[in-house]
Length: 361
Ligand code: PEP
Ligand code: MN
Image (spheres, protein in one colour):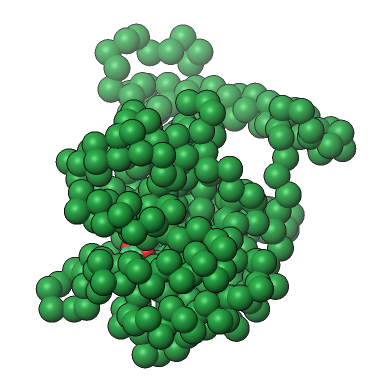
């Protein structure tokens, strides 16, 4: 997929309320954002997908004419969420510049296809939020459905994933999965939504910086003139003043064209890392070779694969060695557990096999 993407800069900031609540609210945000070059796009929720009925579900089409004021006064594009054909038609009728597909819609290929079909032949940028569950194929698939009908201006939005066991985030970030989407669709621009990831206004600064450290192209931050009174997502919205403070404190990253412009000292350091990785892999392979020899011994002598005391000893000793060398206990533990699990699996397989005992013993 070449010749696509939205052409966003790497300092993109999309700001605006979770939901449009009134014309006065939009006017107030226009006043606060006027003359602020840091804001590149205005977001607004017009139809709100709510988990249970009875909550505020957005003002709908009535709110769309007010967004025209944002376009006129701030001269920046306006984006809204669409979840079905009727939303798309209303958005196009009112001249909305950019659409986004929400997490609850991305999970459903029927809905995404319906939206894609209604956009065939329309030249409008679309941003696709990740689905609620960490399913890379579902996210990429939604982007592909839009691309197939001819939408080339596409971006992805990482808004985190539902995780019932997590106590920190509203939607836990999965940086690794977001980076995998970038590998699969290299031209895709990736926006981060720290508001829906953190769920709390005080978490937004830190999440935003992490996102930029991972090379994301921009941020979508829910902003409200008076968050405490917001009709939806009150806890996570920031005031315009807080937004500007967050932006001021963030260090945006420069983009590197990896094929042509890697600075030479960075290249040298990367070459050295490649070399060390090669040595690490050789060493691990030697270690597993010894593990296989021990496995053969255990097979002959009918010893159990798992030797609790020995494992405890190895774990404590290596963690102590690692922490002395400035590696965290958590990292050392997960590294050793991964090696041990693999060793146990190899020996179990070896012992279960019917082949003759190893000749080395
Ligand atoms: C939103 O952006 O207000 C929203 C509903 O987000 P999500 O689809 O990520 O839950
Ligand atoms: Mn919201």
